[in-house]
Length: 243
Image 1: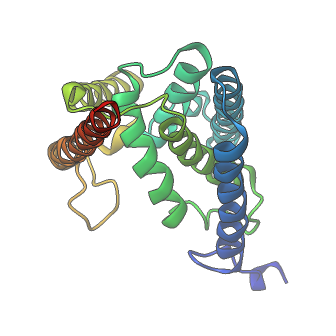
Image 2: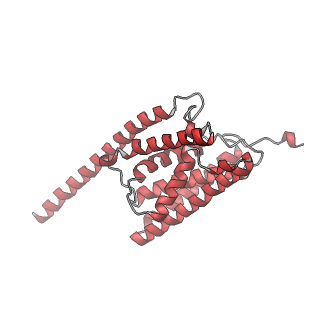
Image 3: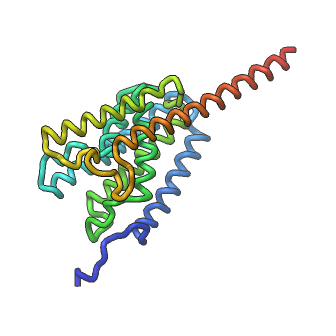
């Protein structure tokens, strides 16, 4: 009888249901933040609360992998998203607005969080969608993406071309960390250094470093152009009012 039960699949009923529920929660959170979160104290409480949930979710995921793999070293984050979820949650919980670390972690989190929700390669690892490694994987990627959007919305993270170097430096630290895990702990799949992030694609670490840096620079350049144009228009309007 059990052999007739199919594992959850990519864009199957369980996946689509989860995405639908998440979209409702995500939109509601963004709208409530826009209309009701006004003071810096309120923003801090909101962000640290979401960061706390993210830390709980990623810790639950890592602990569940210890039992799944029967290996204590499975607790150590060995993926881009796992490490980003842990680091970003800690930086927000114990840090302050616009840290340099955000100028690397935000990009990895926004892409990794959304990308994994849309393409969760771990979804079929068990017959139950609520298998702890599966559901905790979904949760920490989902909360990671939400936290990144909230950081931008509340201006705890403000993109700036002046800080573009933070991304390649931070990404380089990820690669060094992966090499450490491979050489010292024999985790050969750490940070996808030996294989593409997604099989059959060019998403090797060096490709992501080069293309990622180019995209970050382009994004931050455009953001700065928009900010400078708004500031210039505001100054002109103020001068017209005074005149």
